[in-house]
Length: 326
Figure 1: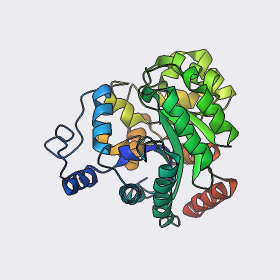
Figure 2: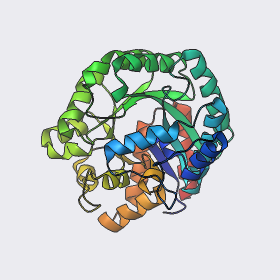
Figure 3: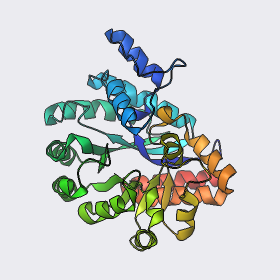
Figure 4: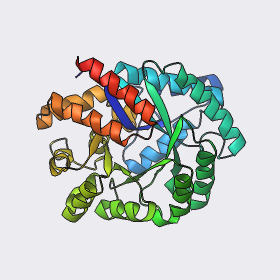
């Protein structure tokens, strides 16, 4: 498990920033991030709302394309140590040039160049993400950034942030723009908004993947729909436990969803915030639900199928997985 290859489809780039990296940037800028860190140096938060505040304050020291290039390197090094060979990272133009297309291109070029240096070991692709609680007008600007830079690196579009802000239909225009540009589509839902939020995202945004989606388990008809329409869930169990979406690992519905036939993948979401890693996620799944090698192999197969990257990239990933099992 420790050295087995892994694919991760739900990783927020800024949320994966090692605390030491953010502290170093803050110190170099003479910025005091009071309240962002605990005494032991980790990120501090009590609940989801404070998590969003700490997240945005911590990312405020990421100000230049060079900072984001350095961040990509720091995050990919952490992922490599976990055996990850493919990662789709949520990247927000809101934090990269304020959704200005020209500025976004500069940030993107810096991140893409940084990621290219790791390509032989870990393949990184970007899912451009609007922030739900920033509102639908800003989301349109984010969607334009995504649509104008679609390519080998920019492969998807999604929405994150406060799941209780607004309605999915408010963002339909942005998702239509991204769809027309050929981007894969995903949406955070079913983390806090109940099963209805998953259904609303499917109906209004016509996505093929749902970020989290675990509260769908309360609605058998919705679970059947996920199976029938082959909607992949980007499940982040450690994140769900850390934020109190579920009380503990034993109560997590991931095994029930898997057993029902829902396509699932496993990711870390914002790993340093939630004190988790991909290796720890796998270990908890094995210890809690008795998952074995075939279960984790199925996760990788599902992730390759659901990934937004090119078919050539998928063939390369499948070969790496095959070589690892020979």
